[in-house]
Image (cartoon, rainbow over all chains, first blue to last red; front, side, top):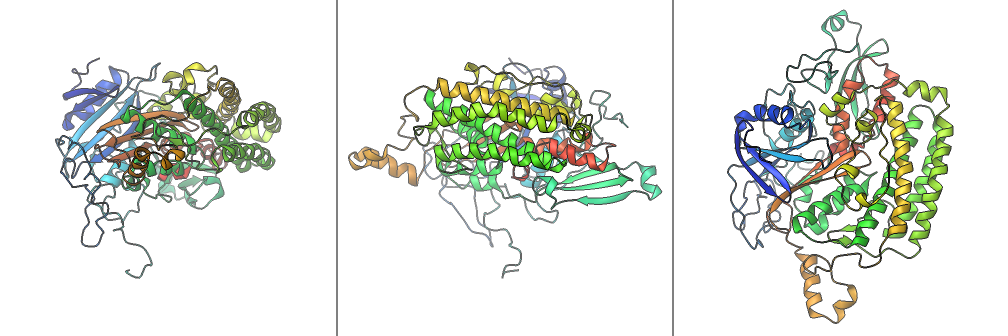
Length: 181
Length: 420
C-alpha cells in the first residue's frame, strides 16, 4: 500500500515490516485527518520524539557533559562498525497509528524538526494525543502549537531542561537537600 | 449530563471534554456561585494504586471538575536505559510496571530480537506464553483484590492473594525470584525450565477456575458490589477508541479487539481461547472482562504446558547469546565470546521498530531505535496505564465522589508505568 496521497507526503519506507511515512511538519494535521478518515487509522497508539544530536558523528555518543554535569559513557558508539546515515534534522516525532482490524495494520507517521521549530498538535484529531504531547514537551522540549494545556506532566513545573535530550547530562540534575544546595 | 463536544474534527455525541480531553472544567455559572469545593484526592491515598493526585471540584457530592496530576514516581527509566547495554537494559522495563513485569520484559526483548533478526527456539516461545498468562492472572488477581478492598469487599483481598502467592511460587521455582524475574533473554530464556514445573503449573491451572468461581460467589450476588459497579463510569466505544484505550477497557466497551488474536506473537495463533467482550462500558463489565480473562488464561496455561516442545531453550547465536558455562573451561572461542558479551555487549543493527503485545492492561508498546551500537539510542514505552488514566475525566462526569473510587480502580492503572 502506498500513502502518496496523504497531504504533505514526503517519503515512505518499509523496514522490519513497518511502514514509515514522513510528512511535512506544517501539514501534519491535514495528513492525520486524511489517515484517520480515509484510511481508518482511528487509534493513535503512541507519540514519541527522538533526539538525534551526535548521531552518526564518530566517537560522539551524544551524552555530553556541561559545566556542572559529568561526561558519562563517552564511548557509547565508538565501537560502531558502520557510521549510520545522518538524519535530516535534530528531532523526529513519531506517531504510531493503528487500524482496529485483523492483522492490526500499523503505520508510523514521522515529522522532522529542529530545536525551537514547533509541531502542530493533533489533539483535536485524536484526543488521546493530549498527554503524549505533554510528555514529549516535558522530556524533549518540543512545542506543540494549538495544544490547550501544554504543561510539564512527569516532572515538576519549575524543572529546568528536558531530560531526554542528548545534551542533558545524566547525574547533572540538582539533588534536593544535598550539600550543594 | 452528557455534553456535546464542540470539537469540529471529531464525531458528534462524544463525552470527551473539550478543548482539553483530560480536564473536566467546572461550568462557569457554577464556579461563580461559590458552592464548589475543591478537594485534593491523593497523592497519598490508598485508593490511588500508587501515587496519583486528582484535583476534584465538588458540588455537594457530585464531581463537576477533575484534573489528574501524575509524575510522582518518575524515575527516568528511558534515559537510564540509554546508558546501558541491551544486556543490562532488559532488567529495567519490568520495574516500570511491577504487576505485569514479564509482559514489559517481553516487549523489550521482542524489539531487540526484531532488530537483530534472531530466531527463537519454539520451546522458549511456548514458555514465554505460559509465563505471560500466569502473569496476566497475577496482575488481574491484584486488581480484583484491591478493587474489592476499595469498594468495601475486604474479604476478597485474602482470597485473591492466596492464589497470587501460588503464582509467585511458580515464578520463584522457574527464575529464582518472585517478582522482576528477568527470565527472558534476547534469543530465548535465561535458563532451562526446571523439572517439576509442568506438574506444579498444571496444578495451578486446575486450581484457578474453581477459585475464580469462589471470588464470584463473594461478589456476584453482593448488592453493594452490584450497585457500586453497574452503570458507573460509562465509556462509549467511540470515546474509548478516540482516547486510545486498550485491553479490558476497550473490551468492556464493546470493541472486540485483542492483540493476541489480531496480531499474533509468540504462539498465540496455535492456541484455543476466547476473547471476552462486554457491551455496557461500565465498571461492572470491566470486572466481568477481568474474570473471564483469568479463566481463559488458565486454559492457555494448560495448553502451553501440554504442548511445550522439547529442545533448546535459547538460540545458539554466539554473537548474542552467552555460551554454556562448561565450555568456558575448554574453548578459547567461547571464553572470548563470553568476555565480549559481558563487557561490551552485543551490537544491534541500525534501525527502528515498534513492537506491541497485549499486556494485562492493554497494548504495551516498545519503540526502540538503535544506531548500530551496543546501547539503545532511544527507548520509548507505550504504557497502557498512562493512556487509561486519560479517560478518567470522560468517565467521571457528573458521577458521585464515591463512584470516583470505583472508576479509578476500574482503570487498572499502575502508577509506576504511568510515570516511568
